[in-house]
Image (cartoon, helix red, strand yellow):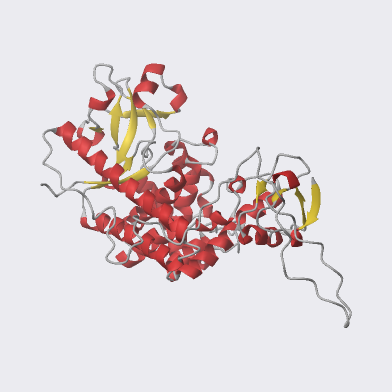
Length: 447
């Protein structure tokens, strides 16, 4: 390992914060290099055997008036050098365009609008399956669009914004046009894990904006800003993207620099005022304990207050390490009881009313002794979720979801931890390690 100044860094070097061979990451972009200076790091450790290039040369003393200038050519790459083993950092590619996924010119259609016609359901189970299929199809479409945004935001920022606007526009239309809208828990196979947090925050923020009675234009800006709020994380090494609570202050500062990267990309995309404010302020807190500016109360944009709350909630449900995940029930309780001073009171009260105390993903013990999984919440009746009940007499794939609002004889005794379930109930209900939410609405199109 060789200690070098950050001024000598270049793309293709393997660097580490510690003098420990095999740790660290490969530098993939100039933005990653700039982050070191932003967080006050002056020197790092360089591992030649894992690097693809040599460091920049040591700076020469300033030449005298008759001296000669340094050549402009970069030093040659080290022959045969490769990234080697250890931690592999996979960077988001930067192609000029991705064919076949929404980059062609012409009218764009969102995953909410471009849906196949369906036959009328034959029975309640068929209707349930159609509804879940529709949710998962929409989630997959938004997931692919978000991947497209990340792949093109550097090279084609305005195109990336247009892709995001299309999907968010479809989402908002679906919410505004349907009276029968619920927050639905999806299977873990739906979409892509890299998109899960962004989509969760966007979906719940749109629904929260609607629940607060905000106008449609602002709700759409909230959905767009929420979808793009963490876009700057593409400029961080993979190993730094989960360091929000790192005990190492340098790692925390590097993680927090994603906000500035996001703000820069938002500016290049040409986001409007509200969406851009969300990107820049989604880690601010009403009590001034947030970052990067420690804004308080009214100094935080109203749209950013909505997304800051939803972002925090989803981070509790879906942290980088699933071992640390709270159940949705525990997460809503933690937000309200432990950190409510950090959030806008109007947004927090509306959020608790919308999600209920048993949000989708909560594991429940019912009054008749059976166990259940909350799978959908109607914001109009949030205290009575729709649940999947463990019933050994019925195969899980054939089990009807039970709306507790229609069964007054059934009540929820308490929420429990997934690991407190008997094994048979656990295997049947399959509580999610990662919780993904989406919009469930009744289809009105048949063919």
